[in-house]
Image 1 (cartoon, rainbow over the protein chains, first blue to last red):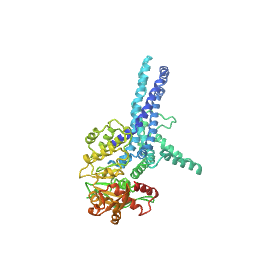
Image 2: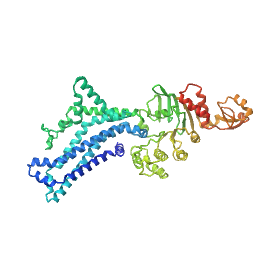
Image 3: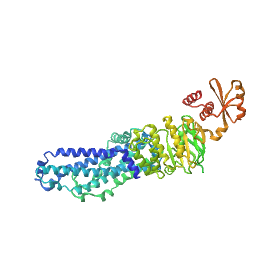
Image 4: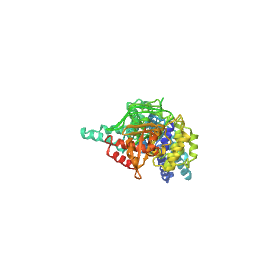
Amino acid sequence: MYWSVRREVWENRSLYIVPLIVAAVQVFGFAISTIGLADRRRAVLLLDPAHQRAAIEQPYDLAAIMMIFIVFIVGVFYCLDALHGERRDRSILFWKSLPVSDLTTVLSKATIPLVVLPLIAFVITVCVQLVMVLETGVVLIFHGMSPATTWVVPFFRNWLVLLYGLVAIALWHAPIYGWLLLVSGWARRATFLWAVLPLLAIGIFEKITFGTSYFGAFVRDRLMGFGPGAFDFHGRDNPTIDSLAQLTPGRYLSGAALWIGLLFAVAFLAAAVRLRRYRGPI
Amino acid sequence: MATIEARGLRKAYGTTIALDGVDLRVEEGRILGLIGPNGAGKTTALNAILGLTLYQGELKVLGRDPWAAREQLMRDVSFIADVAVLPRWIRVSQMLDYVAGVHPRFDRAKAEAFLAKTTIKRTSKVSQLSKGMVAQLHLALVMAIDAKLLVLDEPTLGLDILYRKQFYDSLLNDYFDRSRTIVVTTHQVEEIQEVLTDLMFIDRGRIVLECSMEEFESRYLEVMVNPEHVAAARALKPIHERQVFGRSVLLFDHVDRDQLAVLGDVRRPSIADLFIAVMTNRAGVAQPPSHKATARQGGATT
């Protein structure tokens, strides 16, 4: 299993290269934004503590959210190719000539979006934020200010929130990845279209026939619905996390929607394992 | 226990019957050549043996059902497929790491030693290697696996003659011993004639000839008949007749050598000669699909 996962990372270097490029852009963009930082920081320091923190924290949160979004995109494209590429280049004949079961193969591929990518996102985000702190510090010292003003941001707590959020999102998105892996093992070509068009067709069909959009809402909920379950935003429109008490893993893990999703994920993966037995090169 | 044992092996793709009730028994320590025209069912038979395709009928490989137990079976079976199937993105060093990681019977030192005799660099990607080098790499991996059965499906396709010769030499000298079994399909029949211990012709999903190489050598004789003896030679019921430089060459099955010696020059036929004889005779037996008919006619005139 370990070697199968390593193999995936060897083959798909975009798994870490894309997040690294995004990180470089973030660091570079933030460096440019430090022009005029000293004046802005002086203005911010005149605000009350809560607003002060919110203002200083904002770019860090933005960097984290961007990274979460990026690894989701990377995960989607990885899954669409995972069981298709090996059939396309005929290497499935080589992989099948080794004593590695279809179950191990499919699970190792599912591990990438469920475990490896969240870890990559976490590590890179932490590094990016540290570099951003460093950039801020250098600029502030240059302007004769104390870099310590950045430390109103509770970094360690935020990293904990980030880790929790990444796990929550991975579990919530598991059926999506399962579905994509199944399609990539089944379709002969155009895996993206096969994965997306049926959903679109159902949505359009529902809209035309019944004039409703429950299916659309269902898909949206599967993409974004982890928030209200995993966090307690106190009913505010602008979701912010001010304390660890807002993390609600108990409520999240006892929610039916999460478990129904996970059941579907298991079903999709089981189907993908079974399908791979029958599949050869295309 | 035979290494491979099949009874009534059948496989159909839609209306095309790829395997039509094949009975097969390969004992330990044999090198079996599975020869047949394109689309005869060779690859399907090998895929069934390797657990890559579902089949009807009975099949046991090393005592196991290949479809139900592919991953256990693959500890004892190695496989090189018809074209280079090594993933193009992988580096040679990664390949060694990976196979060493997942295969309990892989001896990394052996693979390294074999690679040391080639010009393959550890840091190269497979996509940077020539076709011959990819074949060498695959052979290095397979030879380092202590398998009981090795299946080769057109392993030398597209390689030049030096690589082809080296391939079979390595296989025979460094890999094969009497406890292993090899099944090989190829169109380059002449090159494996000296390698094989057993011979099997397959056509349209059926086995049409099956014999050991000793049997082959004692059974079949080819005579370049002197013009005045042609009628007498034909009376002995040759299984095939062809013209070479205006003289008749007749192929006989089970005819006494002394009897033939008076008719002309007697020699041992090659597997290719016998193959053409058997396949041309069969072409008249049933209506083959049109593309096969032309392929066979092409083969018969050469």
